Image (tube, rainbow, N blue to C red):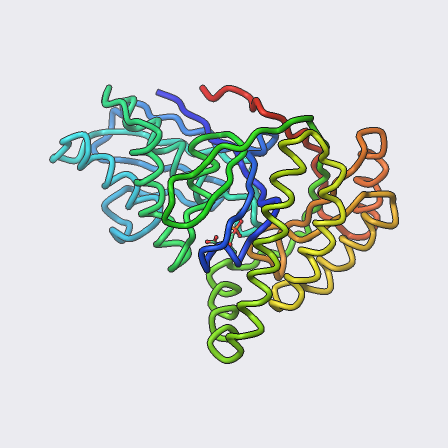
Amino acid sequence: MKASAPGKIILFGEHAVVYNRPALAVPVTQVHVDVEVLDSPRKGVFIHAPGIDLHAELNSLPANHPVASVILKVFKLCGISQTPDLEINILSTIPVASGLGSGAAVSVALIRALSSYYLHSLSDNETDELAFEVEKLHHGTPSGIDNTVITYNKPVYFIKGQPMEIFKVGRPFTIVIGDTGISALTKESVGDVRSLWLRDTVNFENYFNEIAQIALIARRSIESGRPELIGELMDQNHALLQNLTVSSPELDRLVEAARSAGALGAKLSGGGRGGNMIALVEQPKAESVADALISTGAKRAIITEISQESAPQE
Ligand code: PMV
């Protein structure tokens, strides 16, 4: 039994979303996790995930290991009380700890492949909730945006604790994603923002409010078919993320390089400190912006088209 899940980028609102402000995120189908569940001739559940250097039998992993915990939760939901004999292959093209949602994508693909193997079909809502439980093990206090956009595989307007909304993309637009190649733990940047917020609550609340305004205007611009307007909003959101201390010299350099190469705007995306940045470009300039990112030190650049429809999942 096979299932896939896409990566994601946050267009606007990371970090502020942890403090109940809105954020916009979209799936990125050029990168994905593919999970295959097979009957095994050997006793036990063998997990092969070369991308995270994991080759282990389920019972040798701690129960709160992100992969083990997904498997155990699905077994429980499907009423499997005795350890079955399975091989589980997890292949991912999403770089880890880089803001592209690799952890949530592993959870979603694994939940879908395993539950289908047991002919126990789960709704998107159930899949999303289960993946959120696992996100808590990765991140501590996640907003839930990653598991939501990856489960639904659609552009998502997200406020923590509220039913998510799928937003309309009035006209497709092009984003170039640049990877600093530096892995950074979201849990740490989220923790640092929390300490600073506790010490400097008034200013941090103001930054979050400004980010919330930007996310609202961005949603309107995208829905009304004027995505070119979000370039400047990206620049503003990046400056606010710098105020939150979650940018880094490498991210700033890539953001600058994208702008100099003709992008309409650019910002870091996700937890920050490392990981990825995104730039809004006019389609014909996509290749030259991607080249500029690579020559400024990006480990890779992905060009992605954001539209209402994303690629179907298996
Ligand atoms: O680093 P990522 O892509 O997993 O994004 C995290 C987004 C944050 O807003 C920083 C944290 C969260 O839980 O929403």
